[in-house]
Image (cartoon, rainbow, N blue to C red; front, side, top):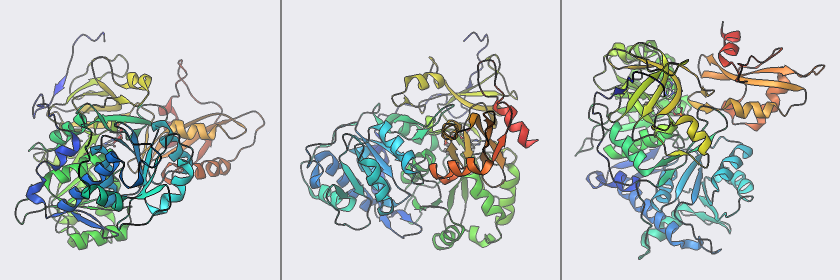
Length: 554
Ligand code: 4UW
């Protein structure tokens, strides 16, 4: 850091945040007795539903079953120990939440696998984490069984069932374990500490393959407190007959769906309506049936709501607020949704990263409409700098550079990957986001580009490195680079640039159909394949991705 002048931007809502010493589950349930008998969580599709009281009983019950080795969990003499990793391989269901929370309460660390992953993608994540237990749903059981067999130290699989069910040997029922734990006296739960790692969501960061992001209890709780600051919070606190209902399409396996939607919803006593996957029919059905006061969305959903002819103004009659993030959303789309609703919704964008638990910048309730195309202002206790892309010097308002973030929500590091951690978190604790941004005179931030490789398809992370390493296996491919190109509905899609070996014949179709069965559907090469003579690289061998993008977006 040779920079002369340091231009640190501090939050207008409080420079520092008072440290909380709560652990996550303790924090989430602290004030819940006020809304004990209200609805907590309902699946829009299956109708499976729990009140706060029921959910708390099953969460604690499951924690005790895990910690006490109840229900045959320690049959092989392999009691789960504090810090062991449990993986959830499941779409959104209410039981996903209760079981994941129970595992965290039992001192375990939870990793989340995208349920659309192929067996190979799933196996990689489970192996990196040294997974000891998997929580899954019936439809994914064959995949989990095939993959988990190869894990050393593996204890078994817990089925996230709505009703207690009989499981074949080696597998367990969530409901049976939770009921047994709830009625067994004398099981002692290990003590969690704020610096213990609670979850390990995956992110590719600025470069390379997806990595486990270590988020501690303290980091998650800090971000909840920042997010629920009176100027930033969305929902009303539940009191008497007042209860907000939040319809969310965000997956719980993604940090936005978990910490920013589910956990803030719990802390306000809201009724959260979750969906296992997005379909227009289910979504409109849920708007009509549940009449939500809030929507948790990504830009593709905001676009759907504003543009789709099947969404009528009346469907939005109950909606007071909308949150959007994970990808860029223009002011034009926001205005179009307001037009459809026939009034100004409290639609606000936020900017976050898995590595920051996740929110760092958010529009406040006071943000004027003309600033709602920004991602907002710094949350309390969060600091930012804009670093010149060439020199690293700090820049001032209106100048574009890499966004650096510091705050109590920044991750502990990448799991078992100190080198990757050093690449993004510097000695002074600044996280180098790999996003290009600027801020205006009122400290509203705008994300304008990325220096990192990451591609975002409908808000989902796609790692170019991962696609490149698959394509490299095709005989005849001499060199390869994958980049993201703009797409009308998905935000971005991956496109491959391939260099063939002399005399080799490989077609676009051969490449796309080689990749497709090996990756989750959103990662496929929807932008196609371009054959070129050489991949442009800088002197250090780094692919000049902007140059490749320019070849197709001109
Ligand atoms: N505009 C432009 C944005 C934006 C964006 C993210 O998958 P990850 O690691 O994490 C996320 C988290 C998003 C998020 C969480 C909580 C929340 O409240 C909220 O807003 C309401 C959003 O996406 O991907 C991180 C990367 O995704 C891009 C950016 O490149 C970032 O580094 N990104 N949000 N609003 N780009």
